[in-house]
Picture 1 (tube, rainbow, N blue to C red):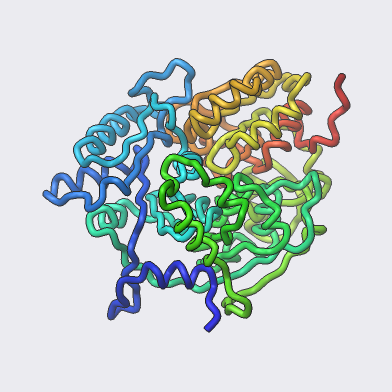
Picture 2: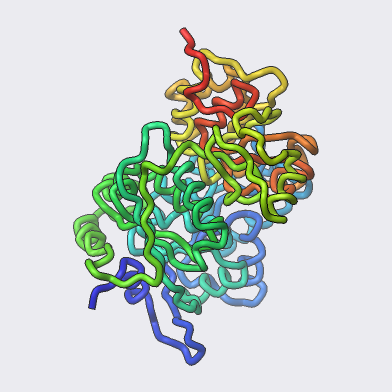
Length: 462
């Protein structure tokens, strides 16, 4: 019987089917961060239980860690955040799991460093108390976000009770235009089908346009599956995946040939059945930016804001906009490049190419925070940091930073910010902050123009 990629991974990890209709699924990797790690780990210690396989549990400091260049091992960007950091550090050491601490060379955002280190691999099950764990499906893993209690259960037993979700395939035909990024593709999909369009399915992205994406672009696309209301997302591993993983710290070494042989079986069979099956033509996708308070409220830069529903009206009231406004006429006061969506080295290279020999517009506060210490280090080696700083960007140290408001420093209420992040609901980046989601290329160009702007609209520089 033909099986999907998801079917194959699910069946390989199913321990048993329970009377409730749920399956008991074996969990290969658990990842934690400092906002949730101490909760789950301290509960395990307090109950007298033990982490079943400490070598398969990883924890980093990313959510509330300071992004200042002079941060120390306990520095936090949120008031009281140092308590999360110190408590998580102590609990991680007590339980013997892998700890990637604040000043470590590998520190960074979970969904950036997990692929960097080869922790996420094709065919593995990986869970984390973070909704954007779906990012790592880009490597052909079954990766999904869970709660802290489930994380505790997974660490102690190596399993989780999960009801198998329905499946959806989205095939992207053709070839993306040179000006279109994976972020534009993600926003186009959500705009087309709606913020609830994935119907809690496991979504498989397929087709020629997907196969042509780099791993970092695939990570961006899968990252926003949760904004699409998916259970998770997955892309079949291929030579691009295998080349990316080879030689990484936690990737198979002596077992590489055996792993590769298994990975090459991980694809959806011809005639495999999906509950929903859609196709998108690459020719229909343009550089895209959001105008409202949902990723689904998005349009091309030369389009106008639509009138219509009550939700549109509420979004426009919060965003301070009116129907009929052309998106690339909207002025901005803030620009942010970072987050688990778009803070990898390819994102920074793309933005730096636009910022080279240009300056951020007067009145715009622009910030870039690399997604990992390794990315920040590589950006320094390539001179990208100097380009950002010369253009007028603040240059931070690795972490989630201004993707979400955790108290402490942020943009002032009412500030209109163009951001490479994944969420734009009311107050996401701070009380009253108005967030427009876009690719790093559009964020960089907009910072220079002082308004929402495509790179091609900027005048040439010498």
